[in-house]
Length: 378
Image (cartoon, rainbow, N blue to C red):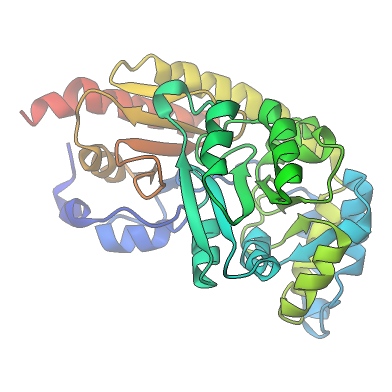
């Protein structure tokens, strides 16, 4: 039962993004130190071992300006990914790169977004008065894409400047390898930019990257993040992969020294840690399989297959989504409601993967809600 001391939980709204567990705790009256945050898709294995040693250099790094060109981390990313450094632009998290993208377009151009997708893309383009078009993918079809139907819809957008999709997509965790090549060919024909969000690509095989699948990359832009995979979201470091000419166009728009010295130093080291990468991918695959099977056994929900470190599910028995959310919060479990993703509604939730004991607690609590708590409210 819900603790009477946590009566505020009933008035707690869904957060706009995941990861702000302390604010949710304050709003709900829960103990912030006890909340297990499944709402943010961060690697739970903690940062690579080198980070602890690098943090000892913080006093020195605070006393000097960061490299405005991010030279060392750019070279390290290039070495680790085998992507020419001229194609790499390091930013303050992937979000800064997203908000630099509109500078590549005019107000007359329009952008198509395959939804559900990270909401900051739409916000970024709308902030620059660039019209966006949502192309929702159907959950009942497993968020599959029919190229013929997709291209037909894209043909209707007369001033199409760019197409945005996630690979893996957020919050579905779906990869679109088979779609990328024909989609890029379509973009070439229309002189359109293809923007692929690969913030979670490191949790899968890097061979799934659009960089490896597409030969002509002139109109290709990849958005990547180091914060999620390496468990360093507080440092804010990401990067874009795009043609050098496009980098020259957005570079003057990026704030000077936007990537701090500590973020550059840590990012330059963690991206070379192959042992951590292999360990994370193996752990993610095993834990995702366990959690998918456990949740899939609950008949009241539908779980969608994922290729990354989170799972999307939806309530299909008619239950009130807020009731589940509040019940789990009363158990100190915070999950991400996906009602503010275009193409989804409040019946959809995303959960990140945690350590086995925490994952088991979440699965047990969800099962308990549908088997006993919900019935007790009738």
